[in-house]
Length: 87
Image (cartoon, rainbow, N blue to C red; front, side, top):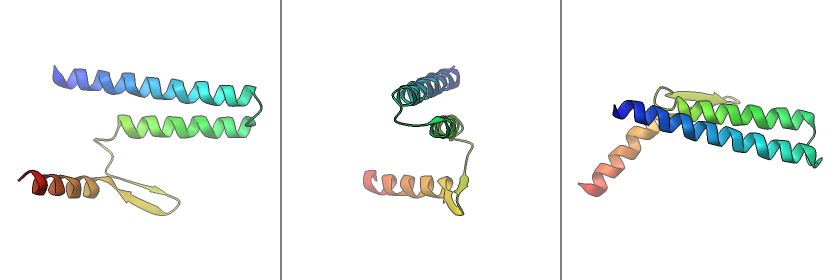
């Protein structure tokens, strides 16, 4: 039951974040602060961030422009630091 609540919570947060990104990019597009290509890019970044948040337990590593980010290693290091502080 707790897993279903966690999935539902992640779904709601993901939905809220994407709707906020969409509204913000639409407002910027309508006020002519950004053009059509920037609007598409903003929405693509919003979708990427939502997927990264939603799939965060399953994603262990990703690469942006040749720079690799290892999430599992970072998580293990942060848990070790937390254990040292509390232990």
